[in-house]
Image (cartoon, rainbow, N blue to C red; front, side):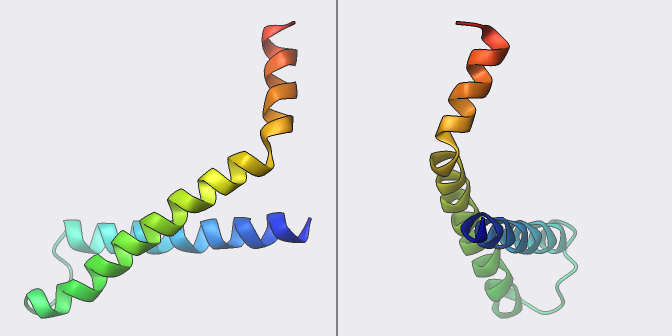
Length: 76
């Protein structure tokens, strides 16, 4: 239970960072030149990597639930 909560928290925070930095960069809401945008781009990129790894872990940890749910839905 604790590992699920920790993973969900990491996924939420990384998704939030990725979302906010993506919106800021898309609407050019970051003042300054390239030197000011670089930290936002790095945060956006690496939070996306963290989120991707988190999703893979999440799916791996819940593979039995996914299999059982698929069997119930599609029959077998």
